Length: 498
Image 1: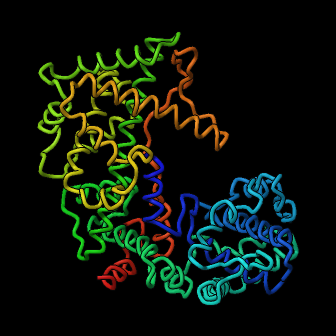
Image 2: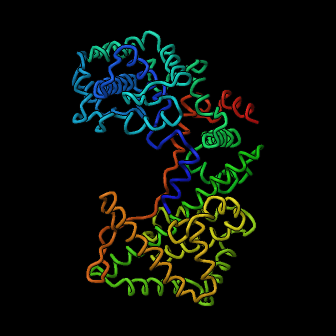
Image 3: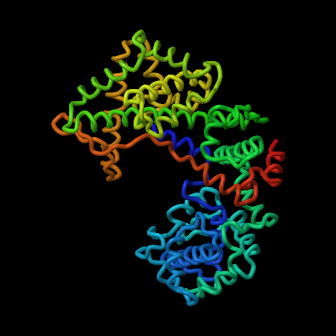
């Protein structure tokens, strides 16, 4: 299920990643590739790698020296080097070795984070003959020229330092205009970045990024403040601003894209529910069964505790859902019911005075009922995205709601038993086996020994990270957003898109 959430946000923000932290790196790498072709020209990938690593190390030194290192790769290394060098020189040759703690990835931040988006956006392409990145003739070379023009003498000095393999600490200040926050507000470089992010020609795939960025700008304009990731997620889910005012979207494209973000967040909430139920079972293992217990006995204990926290007249999932809907939300309106429950689950409310482990599990079940109810109003986007997937293989919001609906009139104890056994415990064990087999990662939270479950370690629910934070930073870097919210440039983008 988590994989479906990841696939959803990847499709909504292509060309960005959770570790592509500053917009100006896109220009830096386009310029480095262009400069390498002009000044070096070797087709040996190792020569390119060393050139690239020296460039990244120098950029980190400049950014740290200018106190503009937020999101800059290798900042900790740069701080140590600057402290040790004083007013002397710093060698860039040592920094291009993967054994040196500048960046462990062989090709640095380019290989770890930025390379794939740069190819995806067609800023760079890989020559089949020598496999060294080359700027694309139009977009890539245009961005490289704009970066060089914006840098001026600083770009020339940067190039010479890379070629000479060292830099004087006293020279770093003269290159400060290249740091991530120094993109000129009226520069050709800024215009290039805006065009890369927002002008997508006929690409439906990249139109999703444009629309998502426009949704962020609309949210900033209508709320009067800089959006945060959770603010954006809940606004897309509820269709409202934080104060309850409806979010106004003029175009069908943006309304449809908001629906896709609703689906992403709803699927993530479903994942949180199931992780919370797993967390509840792990807590039971720790407190009540330190020596281990069979899966059947653990589930029986859990179901009995949950039923004691539910009204005695509730006999089926349908009755439980109806009771939850009548107390948690106004059924005909999107509201804050889901957010209240989700926040309680994410912070682990059972650890607070006056609550219990069973109350925590019941909150997860209540959130499940709300998601089941909301799906009825968003049926089109759910079936369009998940309808053709095999529910026995691909676990999604749709597959879990289908299970709840199929079990709606069964005895509640049976529904809860199957939910906890098959869709929580066995699913966790199956996923952990797959990760061990294919990724060599040991992610088991419990061990199975002679039919008895034993706690290995506890964990709780978390949201996936949907690339929205880098998107907000990129919009700030190119002056469409600021600390105060929308900027004149940002409003102009909204107006042009209307």
